[in-house]
Amino acid sequence: MSNKEFEDCSNNDIFWTASEASAMRHCSSVNLTANWTLSGNQLSMFNDTLSDNCTIISSSTYFIEANCSFQGSGLGTELTRFERDLTQLSDHLISKKYREVSAGRTSFSELTFNDDLSGSYVYHNSEGVAQSGPGDQGNYTWSMTGDQLTVGGIDNNAEQFSLTWTLQNDMRGTLVVSAAESTEGTEAAALLPNFNDQLAKDLIYQTIFGVYDAISGACKHIYVINNYSSGDSSSKPLRKESSVGVNDDICDFATPIAAPETGDTGVYSMTIKNGAFVIERGSEREVCWPISYSRQSDASDFFALACSTDTSTAFKLEIWRGL
Picture 1 (cartoon, rainbow, N blue to C red):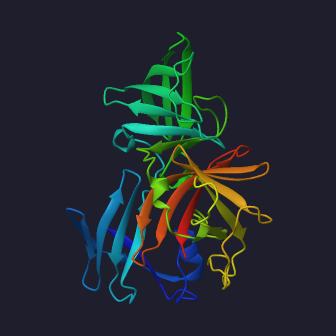
Picture 2 (tube, rainbow, N blue to C red):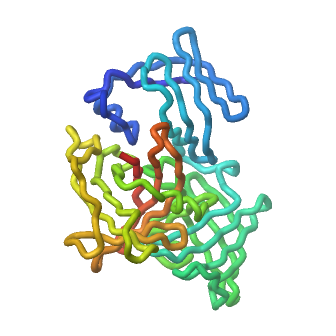
Picture 3 (cartoon, rainbow, N blue to C red):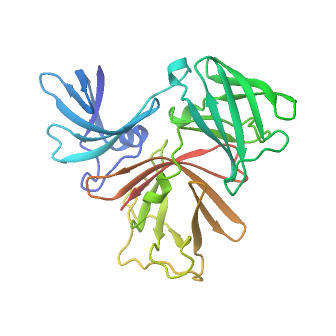
């Protein structure tokens, strides 16, 4: 295997990178050649001078998340995310089940992809209830060409349909996405592989998150969430703050920091709907679907999410890291 290691990062005492692009900007790098072994959930990468060991905690055809110890880093065990760099699709990269979501919505369709190239879909409304009206269900056959996944078939209203999703490079293969069409019409859509609607419930006690652009690695802002609000238990007050990090790629906050309360000026509400985080204030609305959740070595939360508003032309991948 080839291996690029980053070291001597600027502000090394607090620097944490959300993407390779961020590491390239702030660290020096060295290219290595190494061997690797996989036994159970233990991944080892080694050569004459290298001995890195990882315990895999979650994985899919698109990514691996693992707790890794890197020889000589002095960091102890750190959560590391390995993302498959995809440019073309193939059979083994297609999951059996996907949740298709559209920009800014909490409604969704559940899609199945069978080995014999058949499949089906069922539409669920914003309350998560499966629908059986005209066009809400259907069967199809599916195929792949390059970076595109195409389905075509007949819905439960005896109408023919055909649509194509295109792999979007800046999702790093975590999602198959399209800015062209979906089962709900022509709009930004995303396919979430093997979606777990329980992931959002893992946000229980964490109160401060650094929100990163998972592609550029830039810190977008800080979320401060009041998980102990005495108001509506299904809605949590959330405040967005600017980061005070020493550069644009470091999420940091000023202390002391006060918990937001419902009714405070500028405060958003955050609810969980159909497994998605919905962040709202007035006419503003953002929906973030968690793709994966992990607990870091310091017991803080780590989410990778696909986020959009109802005016988005494409989904954005974010990292929420507990601070």
